[in-house]
Image 1 (cartoon, one colour):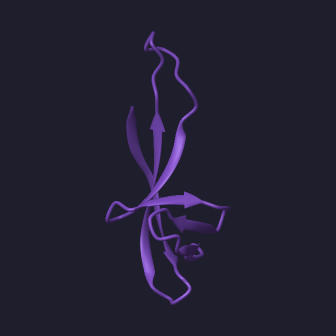
Image 2: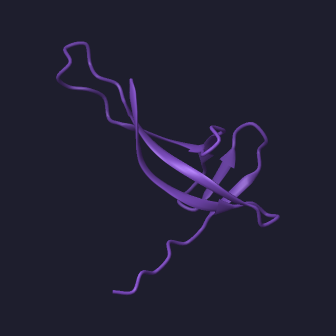
Length: 78
C-alpha cells in the first residue's frame, strides 16, 4: 500500500489554534498488479497525528477528540 500526499490545508480548533493538515490517498494494488481498489483518503496533522473526517469542513483528532474546522481557501486575485 502506498500513500501519496494530494493536498494540505489549515484547520482551527475551538480555541483558535491553527493546525496544518495533510491529505493522502492510499491505494491497495490487487494481486494481479493491474487493477486495485478505490483509493482511500486519509488525513494527518503535519506532526503525524491521525484525523477523522466528519464532513467537508469538520475533522476530529483521533487521539484527543478535538474538533477542527477547515479554514476557507484564500482567494487569489489574477
